[in-house]
Amino acid sequence: IFFRLTNMTIEAWLMDDSAADQREPHKREPNCPVSFEQLQELGVYHWKLDPTKVDNDPELERIRASQGYTYHDFVTCSPDKLPCYEEKIKSFFEEHIHADDEVRYCVEGSGYFDVRDKQDQWIRIAMTPGDLITLPAGIYHRFTMDTHNYIKAMRLFVGDPVWTPINRPVADTHPKRAEFLDRLGTGTLPVPGVSSEPPLKKQKAVALEAWYMDDSKEDQRQPHRQSPNRSVGLEELEELGVNHWKLDPT
Image 1 (spheres, helix red, strand yellow):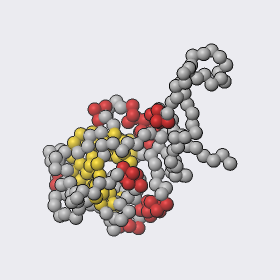
Image 2 (cartoon, rainbow, N blue to C red):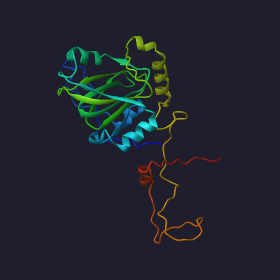
Image 3 (cartoon, rainbow, N blue to C red):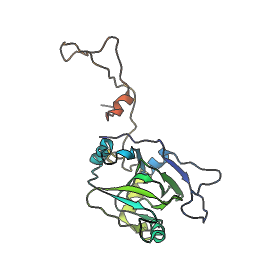
Image 4 (cartoon, rainbow, N blue to C red):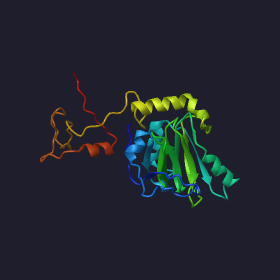
């Protein structure tokens, strides 16, 4: 099942080269926003959920089931919750990769994930309550708190949890880094909820017809359109998790 990915309420931008505190926004002047589509090209995906339902959210459970996230826990980062706080947030800020996807769901507070783009520039992604983000295995990234110095996040994993970071430059020769670069170059980075082989093609909103049925007791093989006909759009079907491609059957 493919779940709707959202481009709402996620903010990202190219970072400046300032040596100021890593917790500052580090926006360029003028600001250089990064779109959701640009993040997707890097294999970075996002859902917007309701963080007040974190303990009983059907949408979160559907996402976990579709992605195989069998393990989760919570982590709280703040000066009073995390021992050696300043040293810890500096270690989080070391540029690294993982051999598995990194999946984080912000339920309280805020912070920043930074990822490298195709030109090796840093993109900063602002995480606020309700943001669930996936970073693909092999992408260079790092995390930092913002100036509020508080975040509570759910960490999600496929199978047993693995937190091992592989720092740059050692990671330059890691097989997962090579795989990521290969997929980045060919445009075949995995899309959540969809098999990565072959890559997901653009869905078409044409040549698919759907309508609300009448209550007639006629043969089930009849069209059973209401009168007047009430068409159903592709967007309405997508809200139900129904997706469509138009292919060439020849």
